[in-house]
Amino acid sequence: MGELTKPLAGIKVLDISRVLAGPWCGQMLADMGADVIKVERPGCGDDTRHWGPPWLAGSEESAYYLCANRGKRSVTVDMAKPEGQALIKQMAADSDVVIENFKVGGLKKYGLDYASLKALNPGLVYCSITGFGQESPYAHRAGYDFMIQAMGGIMSLTGKPDEEPGGGPVKSGVAFTDIFTGLYAANAVLAALYQRRDTGVGCHIDMALMDVQVGVLANQALNYLTSGNVPQRLGNAHPNIVPYQAFATQDGHMIVAVGNDEQFKRFCSVLSLPALADDPRFATNGMRVQHRDQLVPVLEAALAQRPTDDWLARFEAVGVPSGPINTLDRVFDDAHVKARGLKQTLPHSQAGQVDLVANPIRMNGQSISASTAPPYLGEHTDDVLTGIGITPEQRQALRDAGII
Image 1 (cartoon, rainbow, N blue to C red):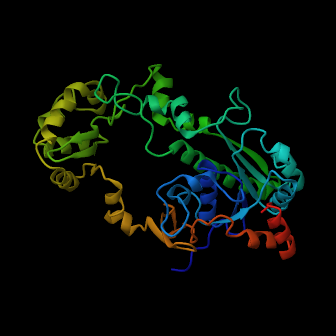
Image 2 (cartoon, one colour):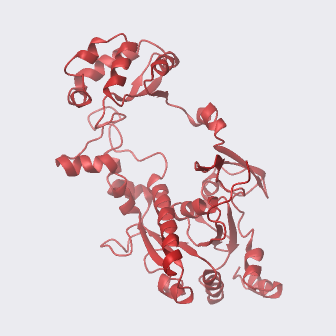
Image 3 (spheres, rainbow, N blue to C red):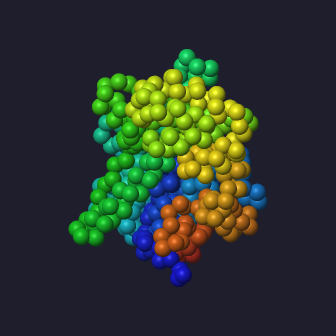
């Protein structure tokens, strides 16, 4: 199989965002072949470079920074100074996309807002990522994933009911609102580039963490909008499907994800409880949801009789969806994860090499994941500035003045 031609080859992206949502968008575009230039503050760079431990051995890089910046080039520029602003404007004039996540109006004083850069480059696709968007009663507020998970409803749905031991709202174990926002932003950028192909005109993309969090409430949002009933926390159970939850086994825990009535019949057969599938209280999913309080204790008692691996083998043999609850060491030792190459090892200029998680998209049988590691701070400053015509003498003067 020949080498994969990356779909965004030739697209230039100026990423002046920090932390996670914006960098995640930029990383997605880099994986797809765009030349993504990450603009950072001299001396300190992206905030996440300092969010450790853990640190990559042999380097100063935090694991957090490494998760969202593969495939990019790093250039250090002080945008608070006029000379730095001029450099960024030169780069933007030669770019297809700008990604930023400053507070609303925060870049206007630097002449780096959409209106200013559009005047230099009418075809620019400019993606702003904020907590609450460009127009909102909360537009002035900073937005952080944890806060948005609370305000946007997901924490009212995640965790055990209040009356159970350990009950209460729980955030996701990763900053998934940031990650979803990065993915939505990347999709918006691709749509804008596609539109620009026909019109020659760029656009201003307005992404808000709060909007995305509400947007991914999915079935739970519609459960509320359709019924008027406010969904409650169910722990690991599902509001619309039964049995679809975690169960304790003889030696640990597992999940069962019975998605239809035929699967439920096979599930009951494996449990040696075939009569359950014929019981009118449990014969259909709708009835099982209605009578979950009677059904689930019976299933819990049965599943506690055998070890996890025994149940998994029995369910696999008859096509009942089930699985272990893996810790991350088991995830990266899993046969599927290994076969699909989801752990990616790339050369690193400081540490020798670095293990990363590959992009899950595959095209023509090949991963699209970027082939270069997240850059160390300012690794490509000279290369990038040379590309916009800044001479070695000019770069040295800028360096002496602390601009780069």
